[in-house]
Every structure is written in structure tokens, then in C-alpha cells.
Amino acid sequence: MKDFYVTGAALRAGYSPKTARQIGSNLLSKVSISVALQCFYRERREESLKTVEDVEKLSEDVAFTRITDVVHITQDGLTFAKDSDDWPEHVKQAVKKAWSLLRI
Image (cartoon, rainbow, N blue to C red):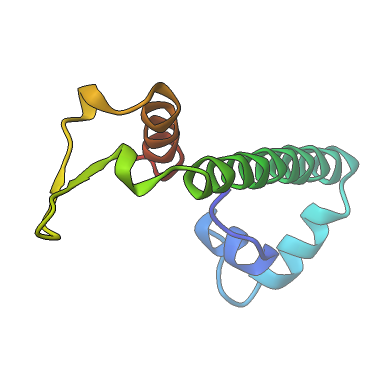
């Protein structure tokens, strides 16, 4: 869905600016369109809830990761990133999940 208001959707569908608002309103009054929009919004809400749960879980994983799991700190106080192959499995999974959530 590209437009979240009926006038914009009608304009994108090719209706004139003079009639777009009325056409959009008429389309919303059709049961089939109303049901389709309800289904769309329900799916979006469920996806959003899953994403929120994923972010909460990821936040927990990151919060309980020790900095020394991913960096080496020398006696002089210098820090070096450890090779990711040497990271604990839970850290690798948290990073993998972050990448998928951010779609990087």
C-alpha cells in the first residue's frame, strides 16, 4: 500500500484532482475494499508486534553481552576488535538478528 489516505490513492489510480476525494470516499464504502483494508491493517499490526518483540529480545541479548566478548583490551588500555569467529555463539546470533532486522 502506497497511500494511507483515499484522495492520494484515487489520484495515483488516475482520477482527476477534482473528483479524487469523492471517488476515494465511494471506494471506501464498498464492503470488499473495506474488508481488504482491514486485513491489510491487521497483518501490518501483527508484523509490527513481531518486530517489537524481536527488538526487545535483541536488546536483551546486546545488554547481556560483555564487551570483552567482542574486543580485546590490552594492559595499556588499547582495544582491538576480536575476530568474529572467536565471539561466543549468543553474540554471533544477536549480530545476525540485528542485521536481518535492519535489512542491511
